Amino acid sequence: MPRTLLSMALAAVVSSSALAAQSSPQQAGLAQIRENDLRADIGFLASDALQGRLSLQPGDDAAVQWIASEFAKAGLKPAATDAQGQRSFLQAVPLIEYRPDTKNTGLSLNRQGKTVSWKSPDVSGSFPSDVDVKAPVVFAGYGITAPELGYDDYANLDVKGKVVVVFDHEPQEKDPHSIFNGTGNTRYATSYVKVLNAQEHGAVAVLLAPEPSHNHPSAQEVRTRIGHQAEHADNPIPAQALADNPLKIPSMIISGDVSSQLFATSGNTPAALQNAIDKDLSNHSLTLPDTSVALRLRNLSHREATTWNVVGLIEGSDPKLAPETIIISGHHDHDGMSGEKIWHGADDNASGTVGVVTLARAFAANPVKPKRSILFAVFAAEERGLLGAYYMAAHPLRPLDTTRAMINFDMIGRDEKPSPQTDGLIDVPADTSNRLNLIGAAYSPDYQRTVAKENQQVGLVLDDRFDHEYALNVFFRSDQFPFVLHNVPAFWWFTGFHPDYHHPSDTAEKIDYPKMAKILKLAYLSTWQFANEASPPKFVQNPQGRKAD
Image (cartoon, rainbow, N blue to C red; front, side, top):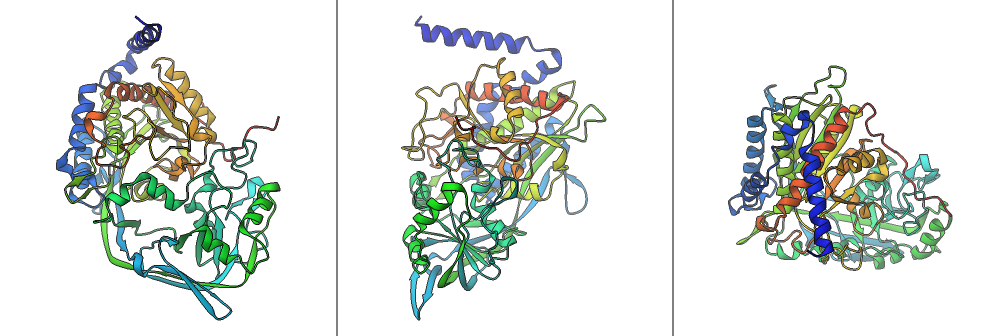
């Protein structure tokens, strides 16, 4: 036998022996993690019958009912309350579904009696209601207020009643020593946080401009790389938003050319301003002289509807620790159908949904329960903007300040492979057949250490590459992120991108079921530790890059 194969075989034997030697309180649950069950469950969720599980469509409603039924059969307690005040496995998530009218959505610059107008692809944006905004423009750097870092783009800047233009991402993101988590993303990098911050300062709209010097795709390029929007061109997926959306002001993504024209009267170029900020993190925000814009956003349709987070609870066995919570989560929706094409979503995210259900069965079957309680949550409308997760984070079923850890499964069933999503942006290891990406360690090294320790019994290769890159926006692309915003130690468990990502070809027969079973066993053992250890993971509010040499 070749040496590589021999070492792999020995590792598998050692891993299996270690798991078999588990003490009886854990062994009964481990025995519930079976490849045949994973195959059957994913086969159902990713079948043609569920029509791609598009949010607010019958296929996704069927997935919701299946998850609730499995929680009930396993013996979990309903964790939500319905409209009649009865306990329920379903947490209602009220949504607004709308179809943006791109032909009647645009931006106009008014200067010296002349008007210049742009539409897609130079500008793009959507909002649940029709909006007209006309106001002067100010530049607010990267749109970040981080008092713990001594950084504030809004210092001494009056933006009340004005449109704010901000750069994408964060300053110094190519610098491994940056106070903004080195070359990784922090919570401040996402447009959600930037728009919310502008709103809190009194702005009436936000224009998101690409940094002139950047090594990541623009928002327009991201859509092209993934490709699924083009395949849905004849029947675009409708947009969705929370009915009680915390973002009350609109935003637009603008191109570099549009950004340059906005700065034409300022005596500065976007590149010069970026260089000045990145040099020493000094404030270079300013009013753009004689610059007023008009935003127009229109929709072709608008309706209110409800989807559901599916939630079940296993109560902790220790009266003192049972009020504390560990969350195990995934999302049940995908991208639906277009004509005869079905976006099956086997990896994204039937794998994560089945992972949550499998662990619910495992912990329920265990005669001994962990000390802390475990909340199993399968979120709605992740593909439409993490909507179910944002809703639960805003309307928690159990206090977030005593939520000690969160394991979020999103795509845990494949081997990572180079794809248009990653080409030229991040290196993919040659062999990912035993590899698991853990995303979130910058905010909780304690969590990472616990998982690494339990992995000694399982033998996966744990990878933290996505915590140290800024090109793919991975950190804020799944349902753990809304909970990170609330200081919960939350990780995304992820086996990586592949060419079938967000394509109809993401089908059940391509899932690596033995690997998925190993991942779930590691999650099971890690959850036991999170739920029992005397000192649960701490949250680090201010992750910084490595110290300068």
